[in-house]
Length: 362
Ligand code: 5GP
Image (tube, rainbow, N blue to C red):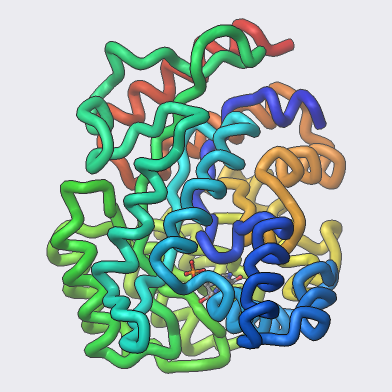
């Protein structure tokens, strides 16, 4: 496990509100309990519970959103989530979050996103390379030190890019509002759009116009695809040819054929899939087939807080479940660079980081 922590890693599927520390959630719940907004003892066990069905997960998100959705808290959780990923040597993070509107506290989708960006600026334990934050973030670094595998005297650095999520509960107009916000923030570190939220809610055609508009205007798209059996939607999503998809748990033969012939990279979230019982066991997980067929894939956490995991644990799990050695793990992590939504300059810098690290890994 220590080795997996020390290896540089790329995280491409992490939901902000799913990646919050339990200690922070408990603290926020206590404060709201004292204010009489919630009953702390009712929610404590929900936060600390470890096995959750997909249905439980979405109930938990409703609770988490009650706890987190004010500007100050959004800023705080963003800061902590980035620090946590950086502390386990994630060198590039695509963090996704659903911009939220809450009239009662004067929150707009834009002000929510600004609070996220404030969180990025608030990180002090590592250098955050983000266009709205510092000038180096779009091109290879000259001034900032690269990560040091052994936590040496140099400061760590993490590239962060944002994906704005459309929640499947949203209308076409609300989805379009998110896309327009992403376009306004395109030069400031927002690189793409994600479609997520409860997979049994909403219709593909509701989101399609906004996703098409996003793509026509240069945003990258990743879709939660095949989290529940829904053959028609899976085919429609694959026909859309997104840049990446997440999960792919309920794919049938035709879906695999289409995915493979279009070479669409898959964000694999092992722990999430097992905890939610979307896949019955690691032995039955599609990782093995995709990996042996050299299909593009990347290991991700999904919701490190909700599923009590970390990216290092996901690599460790892949090593034990699928018999991957250190060299395979390292190449798997490095290869994820090819599927990021940031510029070629960032890719080059990341390749250099991995090459430097490879000299130190045995
Ligand atoms: P947020 O976007 O509020 O920062 O992060 C939490 C949200 O991400 C959830 O409300 C949900 O919409 C989405 N999300 C997190 N994990 C999953 C998942 O495993 N599947 C799907 N479909 N959506 C998820």
